Length: 197
Image (tube, rainbow, N blue to C red):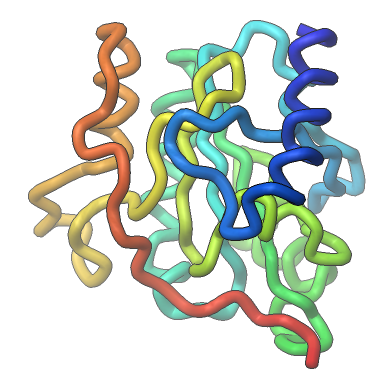
């Protein structure tokens, strides 16, 4: 796994130069090492037995991200037991959006009892590699860090009880069957990522 992690990191660096719009389905994602709200550093290579990763770019302040918080919490709990690790990343610059500071991330995670790493993309280096443009924006990776799905969690921001298409869960179900997700890309609905001017 260490060799895979190094290779993924190398590929990610190369991709950042050759693919400025971020990853597409089928690309190998770079691993990362980011600080979580517990002040520990996390990377995908920490999870040796993972079957895949749910990387969610999200934040504190965005109304869309807030509407999805409980669903993200539920997804993390449901799929951890199946071997899929959810890693939430806040891509926003706290100078541009003070509500997304690391201290307020810690507060939010404690209030909502997050059971997953809530990581801070300090210096905003990771979200451009992935090509995230919204919060929330989801990237599903297999155990080899190959991107299998990009986009929205489901088809209803406003009301979880009215969801008709669970895009992310359907994509995971396809991987479990050894199939490719269909669709493998959907439009992420959310707030733009905040960058310091």
